[in-house]
Length: 233
Image 1 (cartoon, helix red, strand yellow):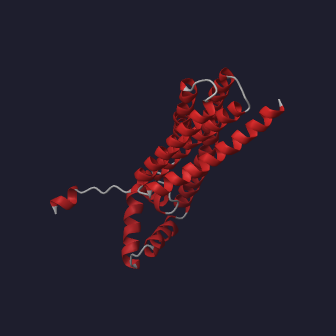
Image 2: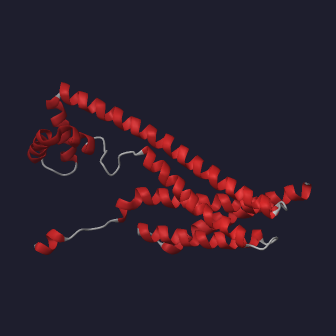
Image 3: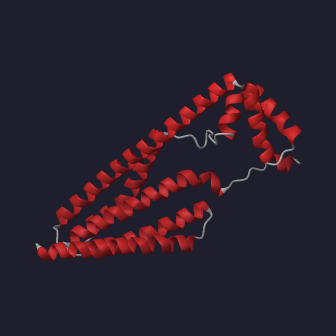
């Protein structure tokens, strides 16, 4: 029994929220920045112009990710606060009805009616609003929207993903930017896909192949567009 009491299970589902944001941000950083660099390089841009394009892409992408995430999560937070305020009002005006509503939720989850009502009544005494917020609205400390945190995390993840292609531009000999950035970025995408899959308990090979395919496609398209514009200049 002592062993069971001290046992703590770790499930991938508990990491899905932040894992998705980090992987998405880093993947977007690698792909957006490398594609931008490849497009400019394919248009026969100078080494300096390629580097400027990459830095601009990093800054603009990080700011875009941060602002977009902040607006999105702020809207979610506003909705959560409105729902909690409405639930608080309903608890003040119809406590008995809210108790029955909570009991009905537990019945649907498998408790018999008598036990569900007992649990609901005890939770209403302990923390009525907390019980309804968690079990009726599906809002908890783990899932609550945090706009500033989400914005900073998204910007940091994008920047971390965008940095390696930029470093490859600095390391690449003039005229070899496209090949160097393409190969290195695809390798970064493979690693990112595998790490994300490993952390989330998914198939690493499938994840790596998926991000590599879409990454290669995006780079090929931007390289083609750059070549067309470069030929027309």
